[in-house]
Length: 81
Image (tube, rainbow, N blue to C red; front, side, top):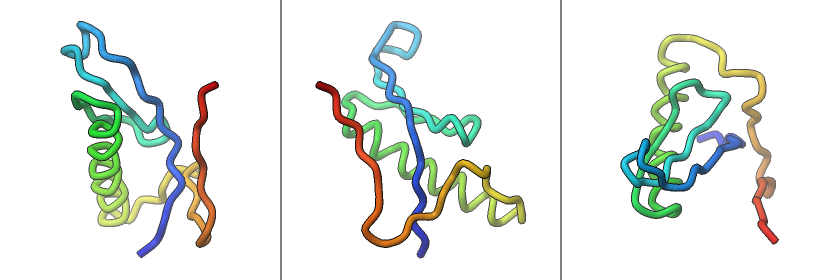
């Protein structure tokens, strides 16, 4: 198993999104998820991203360069103050 660092954008609920939160990974065009809470949305996005990565691998396509494999003990978090 490999770990990947995937930057995401979480959008607030709005009428256009059916009043759901929406999260997307810009480096994987079309990789999006919707849910009622931010936590549920990010959990769903992880599942969708996994399928995207497997699809790239199954088709023998390289992943976008900005998607980095992580070494154990590394990661990123966002903090709003």
